[in-house]
Length: 176
Image (tube, rainbow, N blue to C red):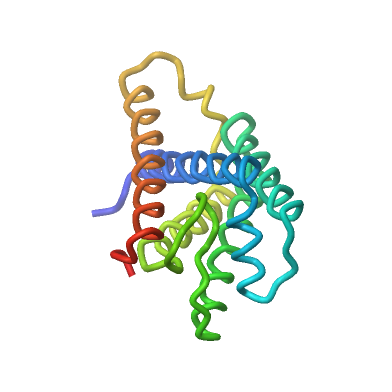
């Protein structure tokens, strides 16, 4: 049975916008405390400093905000590129045998596990899908219909689940 294009577009929009919320929150955390991000970069042998952690956080916040407030293919491409970078960071560290926490949502004691990597890969896929079939801003969805309210609740719920799951996995190592 073929999937309805409208339903698929709604799924992509919800996942993309949830990924944007996660990105914006992660960026805000880096702005407030860039230490974990700087330590993660340093642990991976990359240039690092608190300033670089804050710049990365500011970029994440800008891209997350653009996806949510403006939408469109360019913001989706930027989101996909950032998450692809995160996937590359995790896989590169794994391939080199480095036990480096991600530093994405504050202090973590464990390297990113399967759950974290899965969130990143799904975000890349949503970003790429939204390049092909652009998603508008969140405000376009708020015409008061029950479906739009449900979609907004789904965006927030998915974002919270991703944030809590990533944070819990980074502290316990249980999702590796």
